[in-house]
Length: 122
Image (cartoon, rainbow, N blue to C red; front, side, top):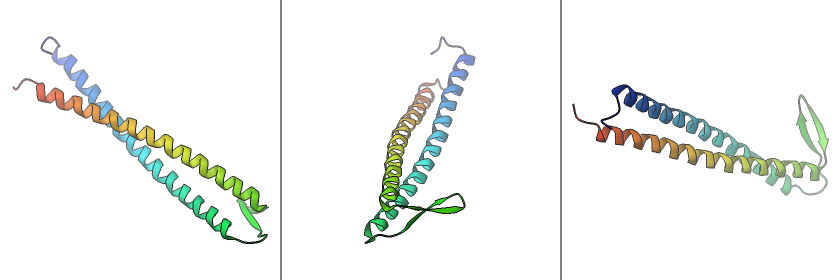
């Protein structure tokens, strides 16, 4: 490390700090997205459960813009289950992304700790 100039060390330190900050911001955004998707999935699950509890031939309507369209029960259930599956896949993807970003942030923090721990005392 002694062979590197102070300017080079400063650039490396700034780069590591930027990586840590960017990772933390991206992680926060990812966690917010996860929260929103999880909420949407729970609402869909409740809707699916409510429709499943209905007996007989019940009229179901789906909101389309400012109006409602009559939708057969089987079609409505298929659409809701497809949406739920898509949200579950999104949640899995976001979870993987969050783990990666958390690892990236922790690595950057570890590098900063190592640099300051091994830095010569002045």
